[in-house]
Length: 166
Image (cartoon, rainbow, N blue to C red; front, side):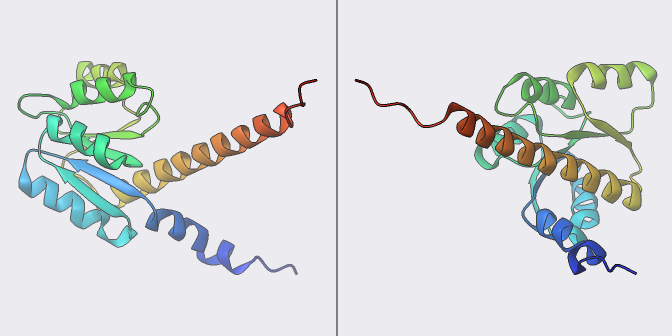
């Protein structure tokens, strides 16, 4: 019987990726913000916070998170607007966004999808659901980053050394 390498059994590679990940949590309700941060505490990620949409955009610009948990109903700038701005900018369009919402209407879900969200979690938030979705989207984010690096490397190889001019 063949044995799997230790990192495949323990998930050490996944844990290493999680430890290098940054998650931005955005919610204007401090209790909700603290609860989400507490739920993410066991992942070993760096967790950043913002209490409004404008603060979220500033944090993204300064810290470039790997994933964003975004409340929808916030003063001054809704989660829909924040998501739309981030998804329309080339530098931030690939950051996965999970909208955290108490809204249950189909129109609100459609509006979230139209603004570019990658997933939804409804309030009250279930810890297991949150952690599972966060891990899944972070894994996708890291795989996409790895693919981008590989493609860039292959493009460099394909371009080959520049031939000297005569």
